[in-house]
View 1 (tube, rainbow, N blue to C red):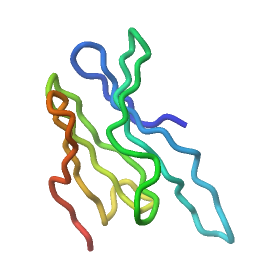
View 2 (view 1 turned 45 degrees about the vertical axis):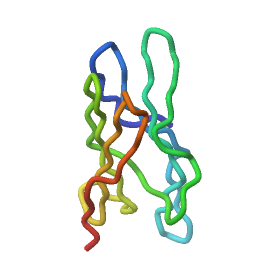
View 3 (view 1 turned 180 degrees about the vertical axis):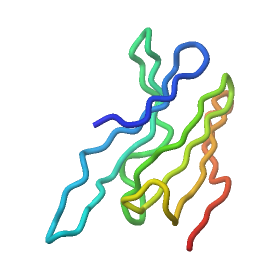
Length: 105
């Protein structure tokens, strides 16, 4: 499943790929996801995060793509607009991803 498709310069989209959330015993369960840049013309995908990361599964949203920098927010909540969340940034020139800030309560 693909989510948020913010399209930036040079026709590059910021996407999140994950299996859809499931419901187990009445509780919504998120699955591991990865954030990628997708070149719309060539179809090339560059992963910004790994699919398997430590900690609980997260979902992504509220991202933006620039010619050099990419930013997006992730949360372990099933509601994208609730805490906790982490804001990540990626430098496309240096190919480095950084944790910029977080709200944990």
